Length: 205
Ligand code: 5GP
Image (cartoon, rainbow, N blue to C red; front, side):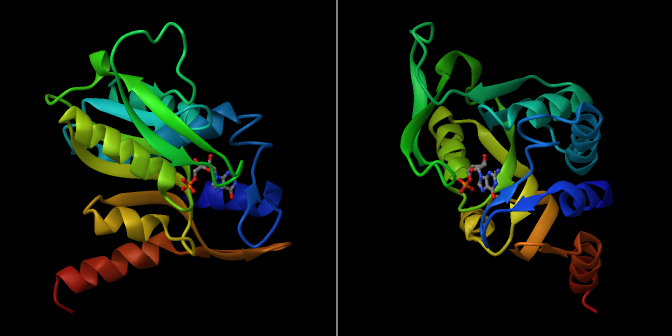
């Protein structure tokens, strides 16, 4: 998604070879127009799938899950990182290690809102080591629902997340795929080129 790549180039702060700060427009202050465009982009990628629910993790996946949910006309559920006193009913839960905060926690969602009848799309802001999304995928499995795919706003393709999800047979679509970065420099994998290569391969060229 070109507009997203441009914003990352213009406003992203590369704090190290592995951490990108995008809190001026994506995950602290949120550019609402861009968030809606991101939702539309996810909807155009996943429109042909029979999605019934979108799943994300609080807090920074929420604005994109909501935008995609509006565009696909389905509800979204966000997994909670701390079990609230109001979440008194049975929950599905999974352990997660935070890449940026370097801490372990459990994510949980109420069993009332996800079940075997659901077809799920997972949306999140970043795909890095993949542990948060694997936690969500485990929750989907526990619920008996079907996981149709994962959509990420930014993927750091040099980390192992995509590989781990694909090993489990989960299709992954990311709107900006970073192949490498260092302070002052960011390189993207050209999604268009990727798609063209995939089409060539499937046509046996
Ligand atoms: P994971 O390592 O499980 O794929 O990433 C989990 C979460 O860590 C993401 O949803 C995101 O909130 C956060 N995260 C991972 N890498 C980065 C990064 O480079 N920058 C920021 N701002 N957050 C990140």
